[in-house]
Image (cartoon, rainbow, N blue to C red; front, side):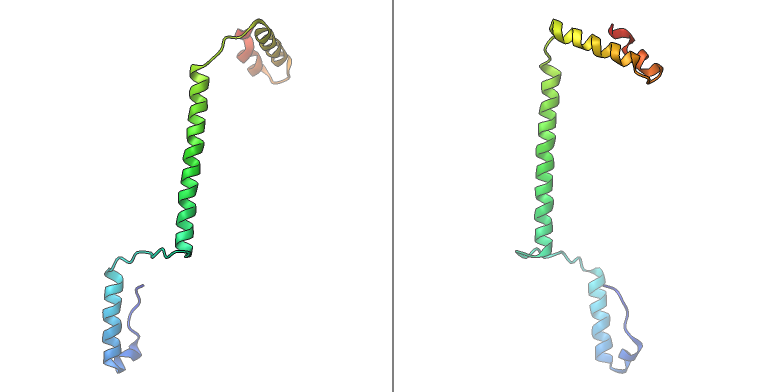
Length: 108
């Protein structure tokens, strides 16, 4: 809001007094947005609430998947263990430097 009274308004004192009073009220009052149905503010707020809901649902799904992986691990069968060893040996032969050898040295 803000602003002052223009110098020419002092030629008409009631205008200057009215503007000064309005400026004081406008600078001290706490005006809230009015979310009328169909307004931009209302639509924006509805989109924000929808986005928060979707993010919450996605977080719940991710948490459930993490808990499922954490608590419902299945032991490897012989074929899966063999495939894992093959992948580890292939990783050791890749030209990635010593990192692949270091990371896979305990696997096999």
